[in-house]
Image 1 (spheres, rainbow, N blue to C red):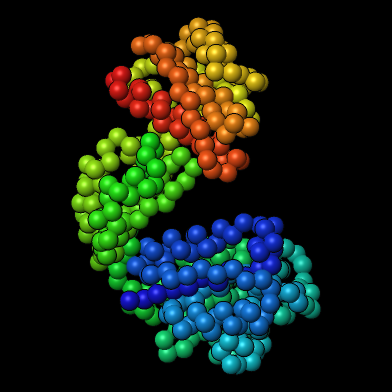
Image 2: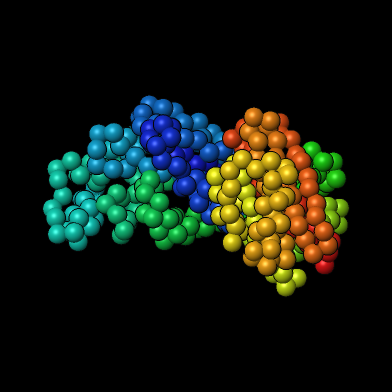
Amino acid sequence: MTSAEIITIGTEILLGEIVDTNTRYIARTLRGLGVDLYRTITIGDNMDRIAEAIQNSMQHANIIITTGGLGPTVDDPTRDAVAKAMGVETEFREDLWEQVVATIARYGRKPSENQKRQAYVPKGAIGLMNPVGTAPCFIVETENNAVISLPGVPQEMEHILHESVIPYLQKRFNLDEIIKVRVLHCAGLGEGMIDEKIADLETFSNPTVGLAAHTGVVDVRIAAKAKSEAEANEMIALVETEVRERLGSIVFGADEDRLDEVVLNTVARMGWTLTAIESGLDGLLARKIPHSASLPNLTADSLMQALRSARADSKADIALGVSVFMDERAAEMAMVTPKGEKTHRITYGGPPRSLPYWSVNLALNWLRVTVEEMG
């Protein structure tokens, strides 16, 4: 079974100055190739720590992919770190230098002297062309491992990953399986209660079933490894059917579906129009529901009054309202529909800054369930 680990390199990531999107992209690519990802690591621009991490990863995984640290400056240590991990020196490669020169020439410039650093790679490495940037990449092989160093710039990394790395991995490790993932989105039950309903399914080895809790939403992930996409889809479908039977209407969508979009589509299928009022949410609900308004300091009573007025003024079929009270860790929800008025108060025990997001998701799901029941 082919396995992999990903090492993202950059002090700017550790300091929170930039968000690492490369790991997610590479992980999904490896998943599609049927490669098991054991671990992801982020390390600052320190040669010794990077080398230590690479050596450690080589003990657990066949494929080690690094991103970042291939620039021309002295704080780009990946080339030297990989060489140290492999116990070799770096060597200047004329073909890679020609690539750097040609790339920079497209901008009408000549390379600076320090950019020659980018033409140095660990001795014996396989050079990879980078037609979309100035940082050459490389692969260092051992009997059991392939250490692949890619740029940190996402667009460059993605291009080289697809053009050079995937074909290499398929040939080197005889990759003939895929991993397919289906994610079911749930609202209305907490992670613990969902776990009680499908706990036995979570013990499966293939497909695997796992839970991931978000603010007011819980995902059920079904992942299957198979020889073909059709076979994986069939395996997933059997488990998905069982999950949906057990969880019922709390499953509101799958994969790229979003709760707000599902709610708007549900209302539209009824041929109804919708408006909303929020208070204390800083536009969070208003950004999800068109023709909404933000009003300050709405109590439970004034929220309902505002909803009635908004529904009458807009001639909407349904009006949804949410007012958050941060000091009380609570929110008031109200709804006016063709079949009457409803109110609901919720209290929250999590981080205060998550209360608005939690409240909006619960309110949207409350609306979804209500409309489905009326339909």
